[in-house]
Image 1 (cartoon, rainbow, N blue to C red):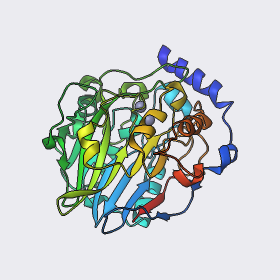
Image 2: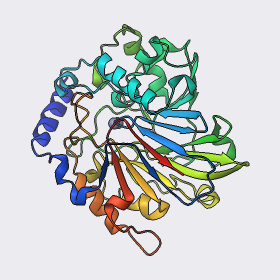
Image 3: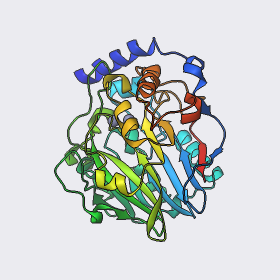
Image 4: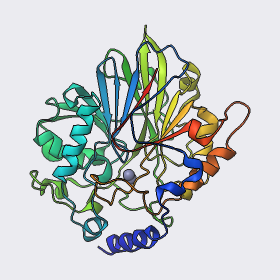
Length: 362
Ligand SMILES: [Zn+2]
Ligand SMILES: [Zn+2]
């Protein structure tokens, strides 16, 4: 409870200083409508990436679909502070409408990947499962903390524990790739979490099954602080044609601490990263982020996620997430430029999409 109050006070204080979106440096592309970018690659069809807020992202290629971190129920800070969060049905249904409008379909999703167990990455899954939005059982690639949080759904979820090379000991092995459909494969990558506010990280450690067994699954009214992160993961997504990766996306996840092996050299040699999907929240607490990753990966485009205020009603126009220095991200990115990786302008390299925006690459 004490920690919850501290979080509430810290974020409230910080939010006083947050700039409105229009002050973002040089108008980095904030997309409100669907956009298409040509990228030089051997991709045969369009790859669509749908941003739904926080780190909630769907990808679609040739009608094969995959989802990351499903969450729509933005919670007012006072709910988080008072330890009582619950599904926001209006927000979830707006999210479902956006998915449909963008030509995606949750029933086509067989695999969901979860970066870590914090409520803003996984909280709406029980609602979506209760309402039969997914096929049964859905395959959930996640850590053991998330498995504990969703213990009551063990009959409807096939849990696959993320196994990955990088940062922790497991050697890279081709079998770590999860072949989820004919043209899509995903490699989990072990990573780490940045502090939330003023260098303090909340909700550390593993969630506990005793807590989650008590929840009523119809509303899942719960304490945000009980949704502990567990081990964090980033994901590498490959589009495959003729048994070869032709397009590669890094879903950076909350992994904003440099981790030299986050992408083993052997993997990077096989195919460069075309698009990096990177979280901006809390970037100012890790001086090497995103410079280290950008200099190493040299992506052709960067999609920025977790930029909007998820303590504010999801159905209203977003504003910036409090307690994040958005400008710091672009300053550090700019310093990471070199002969091999550079950009004409920030709006040419970075895309900061409004929730509901579909970004297509061809
Ligand atoms: Zn988190
Ligand atoms: Zn988060």
